[in-house]
Image 1 (cartoon, helix red, strand yellow):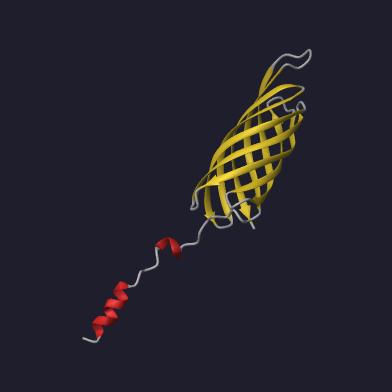
Image 2 (cartoon, rainbow, N blue to C red):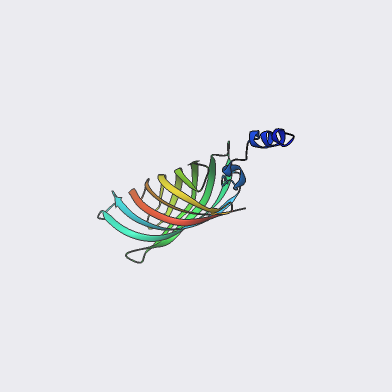
Length: 171
């Protein structure tokens, strides 16, 4: 009879949830470094005395991220460089992007809203909008894929459409 109260006490105690035992992957209070490969199709129109053109390009995007707000966003300061199909340099420097996340576990979605300065092949100032998904390998490492579009004006109207994939490390 003396064991029943102990058994009742043990059975009546709530057990910790499995989610409480696993590390949370909400990394939004950490700084980050990101590197991604980008495929961009760039459309340029309205330049003086030149034909409209569209050229694909392969770029590397590198960025440093700073957490902001209430742990749902980070600001990314970055640069893009690469070449297009005609072996011309492509360079966008600097870029500033506000990335907001949804989700707390391994899989997250994100929305990018930003501004950039394109220097090559033709200069332009513009805005960028992107969507993506990110998978967290650990609290300090994740991989992401995304798609985006940009529009800029300078030496003509420049419209870009892109696909990207990369890694994010956090500290």
